Amino acid sequence: MKKTVLDFVPPHIRTLAGYVAGKALRQAQRESGVTMVKMASNENPYGPSPLAIEAIRQAAPLVNLYPDNDATELRQELATRHQIAPEQIFLADGSLGLLDIMSRTLLGPGLNCVTSERSFISYPIVTRAAGAELVTAPMRNDAYDLDAVYAAINENTRIVILANPNNPTGTMFDADATEAFIARVPEHILVVLDEAYYDFATYFAAQRGVTYTRAMDYVRGKRANVIVLRTFSKAHGLAGLRLGYGCGDPELFNYFGKVRNAFSVSVVSEAAGLAAIRDEAHVRKTVENNAAGAAWLMPYFAELGLRAVPTNANFIYFEIDEDANAFAKRMQLEGVIVRSLVPWGIRNGIRVTVGTPDQNEMFVRALKKVVRQAVAK
Image (cartoon, rainbow, N blue to C red):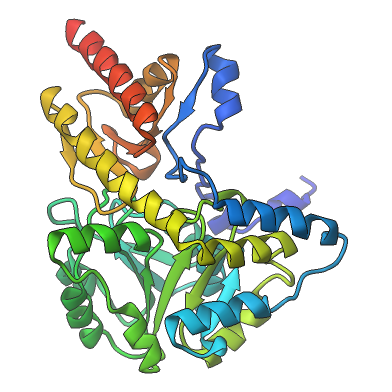
């Protein structure tokens, strides 16, 4: 039989499970025929900063021009804030873009990346797309077991990814645990501290008297095998613009620059990012309302007999007594989009984003109705 180009797609790409996105708002409204609130994708319910919106407007007439490939102004601003050199900042189209670049730079057939089970759904995708293996360690109490993660490292390990807080369980480990773990890891293995929910975790940790992170100390101390990831998608409300960054070793970033797509940070994204980080009041409003919303929601899970995990992020993980896909569909019929965790391999797991007070009330009304309907059956 005559071969086609499709016959030469490599086996590791053929078997790759693609990213399963949360249900888009308009799609859900078309399907259900009701006005919908989206509480599935950990987006900022308060939107972007007004300063960022104005910066987007001002940048719009410049979109006929290619952006500054190094996003120089934003790099400098971030470097000043983190008290590191601009060369220690690497910007990309979201922290996910950085994870992809890392994997293509350091991984390949016969090598592996180590992380925890029930962690970010994109870790296996970027790893396997590079032809490498993802090794997952078991969790303990819905959280990363750093001893188990360390035990999973072998001679083929090149990257270890620690999501802190973890998506989707919302759990975190403190700065001392991170320090003890990094001290054990061989220096030829890259440790990625994925702090996408940094702003929320910092606020919760302060409330609870915990030191969340000292991640930037590794960068300032020029620890070459540690990278810290941050994003503008969460507290800053710029998920639709795709903007994130890593802090780490300049020499390693030089190699990342050879792999990264040119102009991956747009004119509009850089302008919005600059404005967003300067509007500290907007971020403060976001994290304060998020903490209040999470505290308000938790008792309702207990009232309904649902196991929910206290969060350190802007979402809550909880478990139901049925298939999560079926549950999410019934919630959608009630006007609320939540995230089924079946793609994570958690058949009865649901993740809900903490919303505005009105959105949270709408979620609780729908949750009570759907859970009680299931019990009545």
